[in-house]
Length: 145
Image 1 (cartoon, rainbow, N blue to C red):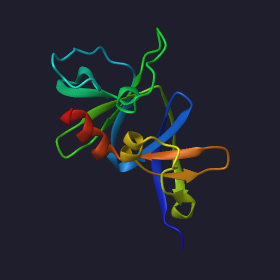
Image 2 (cartoon, helix red, strand yellow):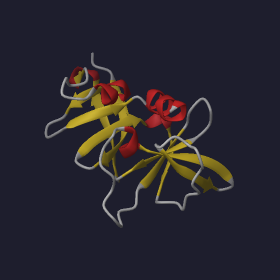
Image 3 (spheres, rainbow, N blue to C red):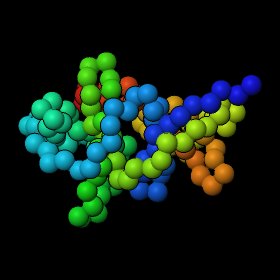
């Protein structure tokens, strides 16, 4: 019998991503950020989340995608990590999707090597691919650069 799993989904441009619902602390609108001198390029700044300082990582930068259009503000997907919460900056929030493991496949060969490091695999849906983000790998890369 196929195992079911739920993913919080989001968009970066036309690309459709998901991460495990259990990892998501909350989803919030754009928050004013404070830049951090000498921080890795993917770290856009720090946000104040009800008194807690949280680093905001731009997934577009992490995946080497072009920047957002002028005036387009990102959304924050705050996830839980072993080192505390971190905000992932995304273009648009999707829904929570439940998928079965029989739709799962390895990352496509068309992804560049760096993107393949942070994509655990894809779920083939009826009308698109849901790319599953490996959040630990994405964060480790951003923090170490």
